[in-house]
Length: 333
Image 1 (cartoon, rainbow, N blue to C red):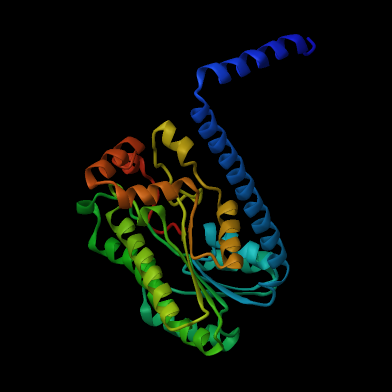
Image 2: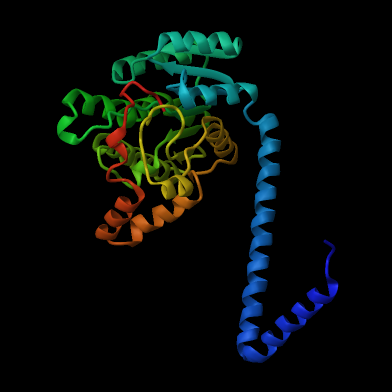
């Protein structure tokens, strides 16, 4: 069936007549202004995204080549994806993990420019000792990525004391010890980048996540205060906080949420998240919420009263999503 130009012309004439007879001149002027501003805004956003894409692709060619990048929890999940992508950009990759078999697998896969270390991140002395080994064997890291994480996923009274301590040690305290181990060398060289993998659950809590969410709130506050401290000293060292949602690493296996929550907040692919982390390093971004709709969550958390936050959490599945959780505390982010 071909295009009916006569019908289209009649419809256009009808629309124009409605526009001129129904709306007052002042209203038409405001509508036109809003439409023009919207189009200009879309054009500017599109241009900004294009320029960012070009800058990222340009920096990918040179900025990380030969740089030492240390990733905690680097043998599995998101850490392994980060290792692959950083290695592809000719970085010297240093992986820390407690899983010796996975470390050997990563070393066999990447073959060159990779150094692996068995580290217990719940042990502060172990962190400091292995940090000295890295400084001696490879050199001081140019980029430190605190990625390792654990989750217990139980109601607070069912969470053992040891599980709480482990969650806090790996998720919240280990970044303190790694930063204290490597920040002095960054300050000496007047160069460095610290990346902390936080979580949207460090902004907005949920049932059966008391230890995990508290640890991620700690990461949020730690990174923000560290950023301000470095800036107050006039330091060029950059900090980046990454706040992802549910990543398909198996760490939150079994979690269920309403169908509309899955549409609004889809599960994130490991490779995509790793690309966003690398992009944030290249662009020296300070806070990255994955995805953009989580900026709305962040604003709601600050602007609306607690009772409304709770209602929203209930509707989105924060009350009961973890009841079907089958993951275990040794899963890494």
